[in-house]
Amino acid sequence: MSIEAFLARLYVDSELRARFLADPAGEARRAGFDDATAEKLASIDRTGLEMAAASFERKRDAKRRERTAPHPPFGHPLPASGARGNDVNLPHVRGGATT
Image (cartoon, rainbow, N blue to C red; front, side):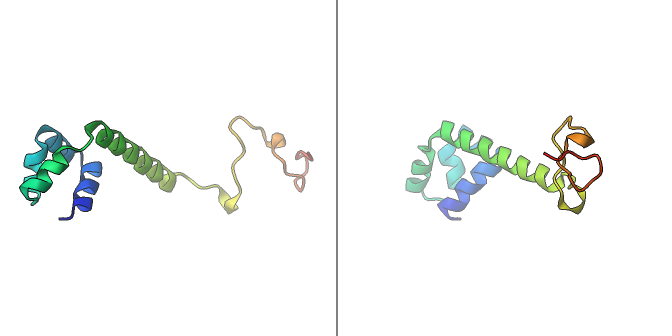
């Protein structure tokens, strides 16, 4: 496994990340890295790792919500929350706002 692939897994796999944070060099060795590489990986900024993992998780959650959110019909955006029908700029509809 490449270092990049291992780091990517650390960012997305919370169980692997917990094991790594408990025993960084040991977990790196179990992933197949030699002692020198395992020791370098053990010196990773742990706070930065956790912050990056949390950031990526929020981004994945936002993308999941975006994919599952209902879409308005005909591609028209929905009016702002609390807007009444006559508050929406629809000059082609009788009674719609003209400004």
